[in-house]
Image (cartoon, rainbow, N blue to C red; front, side, top):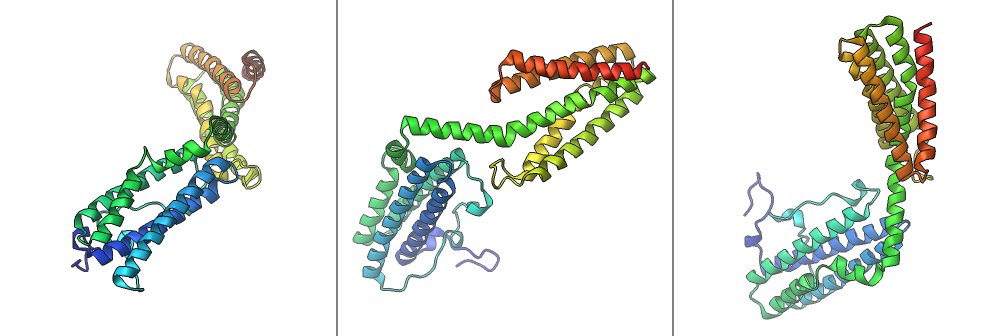
Length: 325
C-alpha cells in the first residue's frame, strides 16, 4: 500500500478490477485529448483535425469495450482510478497550456501517447488471469501496435499530398507572421536607427569607449521601445500574429542585437580599426536583412538589397555629417 509520503499505487499492486478501471479512465482521457487537438486545429489545419477526431472516436470505442467487459465481471460501479494515481505514468501538459497548437508538437505527442497505451496493455496482459480480460487486453495491445502508428495510419487516409502541402504552407505563413516579421522589424530598426547616433558620437569624440556607451544606450533603448511598441500594437486575436508578448520579446531582442553588432567593435581601443570593423559589420547586417526579406517576404534579393542598403547608407551618412559638424 502507498504511504502518506507517496500517495500513488504501484502498478504491480493493482487487481484486475483496478486495471480495467484504470484502462477505462485512460481511454477516456486520451479521447478527450485527441478531441481537444481536433478542436484546436480545425480552423487552420482541418485535415489534421479530422485525423485527431477519428483518433478520439477510436479511443471512445475502446472505452466502450472496456466498460462492457467491466460490467459483466464486476458490476455497475467503476472506481475512479486515473494515471496519476499509479506510479510510472508520464504526466502530460494540459491542452489549455500549450495553445496555440502546432502540427509537429501534437503529432509527436500522439505518438508518445500511443506508445504509452501499448506498454500499458502489454503490462496489464501479463498480470491478467481471467480469459475474457486477457482477450480484450490483448486485442487492445494489438490495436495499439497495428501499422506504424495510429496517427500515421489515419493520416494516410486524410492527409493527402495536396492537403499536407497546403497545411505545410499555412504553417510556414504562420511562422513568418509570428516569428520572422517581428524579428525582421526589430533587426532593421536596430541595425539602421542606431547608425546615426553611434557614428555621430564616434566622429564627434574619437573616443571608442564613449562611442561604445552611446551605442549600448541606443541599442538597449531601441530594443525596449520596439519591444513594448510591438507587444502593445496587436493582441493577435484577429490577425493571427501570435501572442503579443512573444512578438514583443522577439522584436526587442532583435532590435538590441541589430544595434550591438556595430557597437561592440568600439571595445577596441584603436579608433580607426574599431570604425573599420563597425562599418564592415554594418554591411553584413544590411546584407542579412536583405537576405531574410528575400527568403521569407517574397521580395527579390536585388530589390531588397537596394532598399535596405540605400536606407542604411543614408542614415550612416547622416551620422558621419553630424559627427564631423
